[in-house]
Amino acid sequence: MRARAVAILILGLAFALPASAWAGYAHYWTWQRAPDPARTRAAIAEMVQIARAQPDRVRVESDGASVTIEAIGDRTGEPFRFPCMGRDCQPGAFNACKTLGAPYDSIVTSSLLVARDHFGPGELQIASDGTFEDWQPGRALYARVLHRDPPDGPLVLADPDAGGMRASLGPFGWFRGALAVALVIGVLAYLLGGARARDGMSWGTYYLAWIVLPTAIAIVSAHPIVLAVAAIAIAARRWLPDPFLLAKHARRTRSLEAQVRANPSNVTACRDLGMIWLERRRPRRALGFVEQGLVRAPDDVELRYLAALARHGAGEHEAAATTLLAIARDEPRFRQGDATLRAADALSALRRWDQAIAALRAFAARNRSSVEARVKLARALRRTGDRAGAATARADARQTYGDLPGFQQRAQRLWYARAWLPF
Image (cartoon, rainbow, N blue to C red; front, side):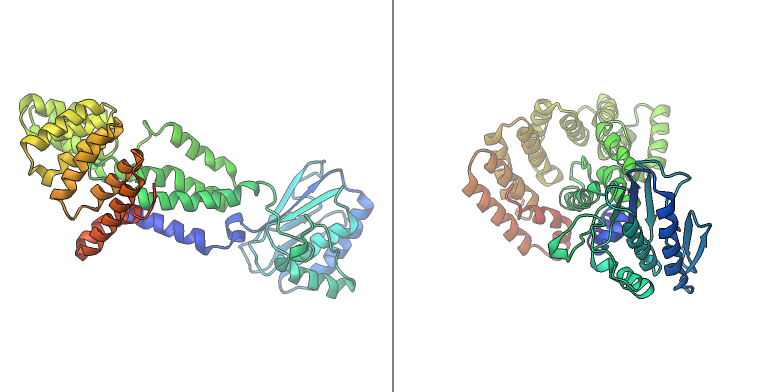
């Protein structure tokens, strides 16, 4: 529940924060050639004039060859330094001032308009996270102080629909919009598809911790290198732990493993460790403990069931399906017939659709409150080309959900959401 709350919070921020907030709302300029000293001094003189017209917002320092404009009483933005943020203005030198839309932003945009007056696009490229409307206060300040109209462009690219200037994503900005969309899709995928499966093999919290959160950080910080974390997590998902589950089970796991070391015949500890490692998506590790318990209690239905789930998670679908179907036949009331549903999962992995459909129909007939079984039946039917049957199964899933009491609806709301998806 805590992981899901984090996901909902991230999704809310993705929709609530404006695009400028995701990008950090900054302005950018890149020199294509070293700036001419005489024109630089002329530009700086006008920038100082603009800054000093707003003494309550900024303090300004200049030696004639460079200028620094810093917000007063506002710690959210960076100082604006021209002609370069660094020590030199070599061709290709990248400069950025992250104002975050603070009140002194109008002074920074006015200064960049001055820079455009003195240096053409072939000498100085200027870009911004802001829109034409965002630059209006700066244009008004420019006109009021310098008594002339500000340049119409292009600071970035001309856009007739925006009245002469359009927003630019700036350096690294190419990935922000795409990542924002990917973030929303990722969180929705977690919310719709990352609910903990009843067999304990969900990847939802792993993706949230290692992919969704780094993507969010990359967007907010505007540092693409952070995405390396997500890339590594995708490649190393069989080895990297899930931080949520690691924290949840750390103490319990250490205690149980100590008990097993002290008494290898402790069936209860072996069973509990198997369940924990299944939830942590380490089916082969789980299988080792479960098989250790089966040596002591070979007929224990719970251990056989957990062993089958572990084999299914490890890719041994045939062995898993055989065991689960045997449990379903011999112990039909075990876990309210859940072995039949899990057998259907294994049969689906084997693409034995007719058998999977038969198992799902049988389970759904006995468990009239299972939305999950009906959604999985719809998917299996669709794989066989029976689109009409799949649509009927999805409608049945939605109807089943509507007939459930509130506590059961809460437990199956994610399966209900999936029942609306035609795939």
